Image (cartoon, rainbow, N blue to C red; front, side):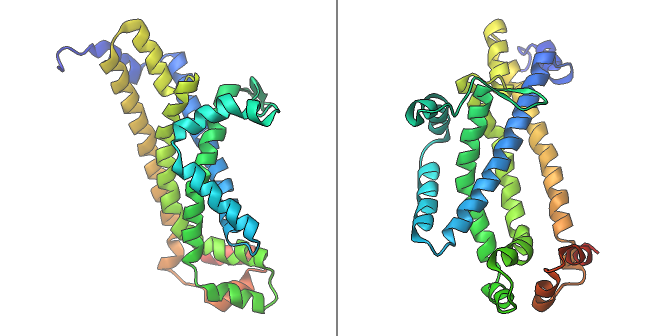
Length: 264
């Protein structure tokens, strides 16, 4: 098997990638980053809706998770790309999006939107677990001092919950990098689609997909190093001086001082 491989193709794809491959690699990265950021925002909003006193907001949050965790992501990608404009009657997915610095293809935009919405459903559960891990007495203590719920959530609860949220969030982004391969099915030329194009021209599937596997491994390995560094930074205060509940609440009115002390 190894003897039958065309090592020159594999070597070229790994060590001397052409311009089209570099563009495909870049698309994979920015689609993953943009979709994950969208997912984090939607997940946080959905988690806060779940905690709302308004039943319709809690119901909407629950339906969001039910629908987007209960259906395949590839179906959601096709639905957003082919069905969003038709069903809503407005142009949600344009042919291209002008971002000033560069033009984003409508297919890539649809992929980011679909992956981000899907990711938001998973991030809601991660945010929920992180927020629920913080003792409810801290929120009650903040309110007793006259601090609004939103301010207490932003300056007291979420900074502490970050230690619980970041590890699974990092794992989700690791998965997102690989899930971007699904946007190839709506015509986005990312890593997987680029390999498909090369395969159709050379009929060397093993060489092309081995190189794709190698580059996905590189991306996930680099992210794993970054994730470990972030987790170490968040854990610094656990190895040093901790703030008490009352100190956290008092310092939350001056967050710069609070974060400065926590970073020592």
